[in-house]
Amino acid sequence: MAVHPAGKQNADYFSAFDPNRAIGDYEFVVFDTELTGLSPRRDEIVSIGAVRIKELQIIVDDYFYSHSQTIKTTYTAGTFIHRITPDEARKAPTLDVVIPAFVEFCGAAALVGHFVNIDIPFLEKACRKIIGGIMKNPCLDSIRLAKVYDKGLKKKSPDKYKVIDSHKLRVLAEAYNLPLFQQHNALADALQTAYLFIFLVKSLGQEGLETFGDFYRAGRYRRWLV
Image (cartoon, rainbow, N blue to C red; front, side, top):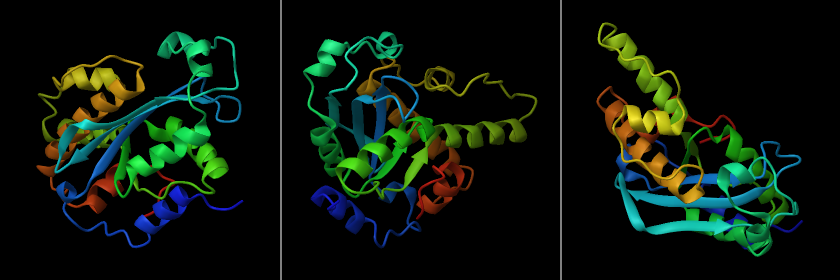
């Protein structure tokens, strides 16, 4: 199939990506998806939410949020989590509209998600079908960064270390005293992840991580290459 203009532009953005600048020099898009289920083969994206970070600050009025039309027209297990009804999904734009718009919103920014092993296969499947290839944006996973930070705390102060029994987004936000937002809403979860990401970048920066490459090695999603 022909490559969609959004896909071509995306590839052009990252043809010569430099990972060696300070982490604060990069722009990030923090994203989340809501799904009908967890199988990329059988299930679908029902919404995408994203917020932008520049100079390690959230740009509150620069965000992306859209429901997407699904083939499934009945309630699924996911419905009771994200609360997007089949009727709402039927009235939403199709992924043919949502995916190019999301790719264009991301632009030349690096991506951040929390436990992106769930989200990325769905995005890759949709992007291959709609824009003719996967997004080339390097992607950091905040759950991986949180584990690096947690391991460092345990090693640095074993006597004072407070056990975090889960690396779920809400648990980490509460553990680090971050602002709390609605759960299982793609935009609110993206905003929650953005606060977590900034906290981790600043905290890990005190431990010697400086460049994008440093953070990429610590918290990359394995399929992305820089």
